[in-house]
Amino acid sequence: MKNVIKILVLSSLSFGACDSFLDKEPIGLITQDQINTEPTESSVTSSVNSSYQVLSNTLNIIGEWNWLGGTVLRVDFIIYDIASGDMEKKWNPDGDQAWMDQVASFNFTSLNGAFNGTWTYDYEGIARCNQAIALLEQENLAAQTGMSPSLQDRLLGEVYFLRAYYYFELTNNFGDVPLLTKPLENFEQAYEVAGRVSKSLVVEQIKADLESAAVLLPTAKYSSEAEPWRVSLGAVKALQAKIALFEEDWTKVLQYIAEIESLGFYALNPHYFDAFEVSKEYKEQEVIFAYNHEQGLNPNKGNGLGALMGWGFVAPSEDFLAAFEQGDPRSGYTVNPERQLIHKLLGSTDGEYKGNDDSPGNKIYIRYADVLLWKAEAYLQQGDINQGLLLIDQVRARARNTPALSGLPNTGAILPPLSNKGLSMEEAIAALRQERRVELGFESQRFNDLKRWGIAKSSLTALGKNFQDYHMLYPVPQGEIDKSGGRIGQNPGY
Image 1 (tube, rainbow, N blue to C red):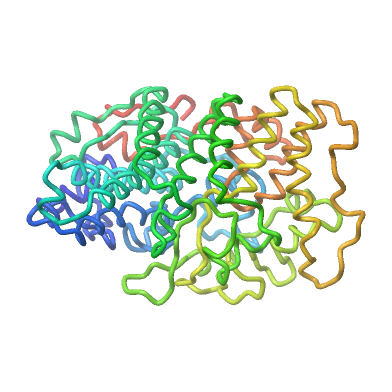
Image 2: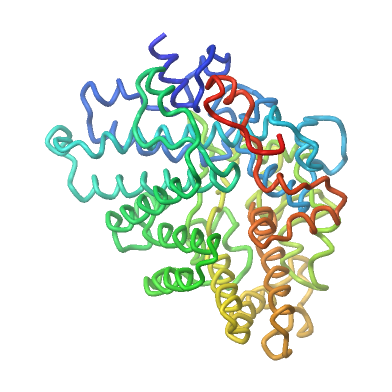
């Protein structure tokens, strides 16, 4: 029973009977018992590495084919891309996995597996981070393991960032959530912390974690040249900027982006698809933070989303396809409707990884084009239309100069600059929103953009979706409420 308790508190805030999918320890998890008995540099590093794992699209790292529970793989493509109206569940609609359709139409309840999935993944990540942080903060760790102070600091900075990221996702999806900052050892401790705290307090913790991470991480593009996938100082600054963006603190957005730019590590790639091409991973200039998928490992570390695409999942909506300007090369690099390929998510333009449950394509969370568009938005919101449009034009120019996937030459008429058109503030804001949609399509940004801009209801009801005001937050999974004995409350409307 001791191991079952540990799995329960690591997987989520679960307080009831042992769910069958929790009887199996998540792949790659290093337990507190294993690292406390006689910690080594290797076991400490493995504990940190396990904190990254729930950012992956690897299949079945939590549970075994629990589709209805939303835990077969991360559900970002459902709760962000399908919900936004950019993505459809399948190329040919059918009744398979109807719970995804319920999210698409906003006709869901708190029993829907999508919300259990994101809650479970995020709290699994937080539990792993808390475990690693508690270990790394031990005063005698260096003496016990022989670990250098610089490595100890770097690893601690990484998990502070990861915990901040998981909580940032939770607050955006659920609002007030339980706040855990230490490992839980038993049901009594878990019960004590059950209950939601205000989003503002959670955001304070997020900001504190990021400030700590920024001090601990080295000033380098890659925290580890041997493992360039690790959290970097640039990733920390970017998440700080994104939080300021969501809070509409435009001065801080520009401040953090200036700090990113002063590092000199990032730029727009010359070619739009370079950020997504498997063969160019960690050789390009734009990706700031991504999860590193690798194929052929045991246990698996590949991108399982390719397998779903092999079964016909993940398709563009007609409204999304119509959003691209005539001749925009980004349309072809994002999706090929004729061959039913989503190039950006597969990591190639030839369909090589479609149907592959162990494909190597990384999952991108933050890239520099996104950051530039945050900067443009901040300038526009401060009234500097020209500066904002010039930044948008940089993103458009890169797209314009990217050769069409078809091999046909681009014409000079496509994607013309916007800064010389005399746009009003309203027109400039509309242009920014349009540019974010086509530049970042299928990167799980659109739904949160619609919400923070205050246009989710108007945009989604125009697409025929049943979006109501209370859908600005998703429901807390009913199972978590039940297991907490009601100490975790539900969001209004559900």
